[in-house]
Length: 255
Image 1 (cartoon, rainbow, N blue to C red):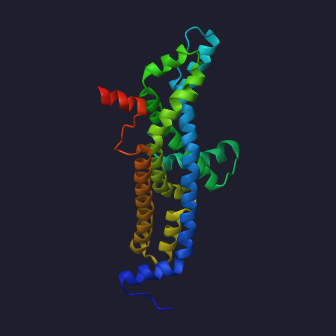
Image 2 (cartoon, one colour):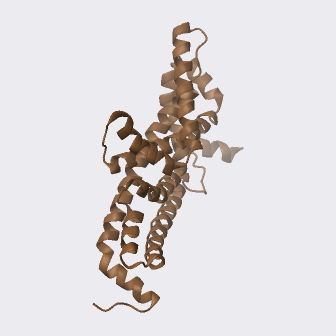
């Protein structure tokens, strides 16, 4: 085996010899990002909606107390996961479940759980902001036609909030792709973990990490451009033509 002697020679050598390891790591990274983003957004929507619920003063004291307690618990969850590094969260969840309850959960599932909880905490605040940004008159209009609060949220508020959050969800997915790299601390075999293993074989750390840097960049750059295209599609045409029926056209012409 010929050992490379130049920088680019080493880059080419590492890609040719370990491309399968990089691809497997990339596959795990994408799995983590996709599953974690989906679960995290679901958690974020549930938490955001619950924390946005306006407690009816006419409800029983027990109902108001339970809702206040639930909101307090969710607020603690959000503050903890927004106020601590995800790397620390990963070690606490992975080793904590083993120490406290004797659960030896696979590192991949621990990584998905941490990523989802982390995304959910941040997404919940975005959901609250999106709900708060809806005109209160729409809630009053729904109540005027006899809709319950749950019906108003489901049929009126949430569809608008979801549309406004689509760019945020896309950006969250892009961030999740990069954030998966910290999960190597609990031995999740994602892209960074694979690169670390390859780099330690020949002690070519710069060359190896430069390779995965390019991979991460291609992934995030491609996703950001796709999101821009999606945003333009959702916005629709910027130029609209007013189309009048025959009677309106006649009326306009006479006037």
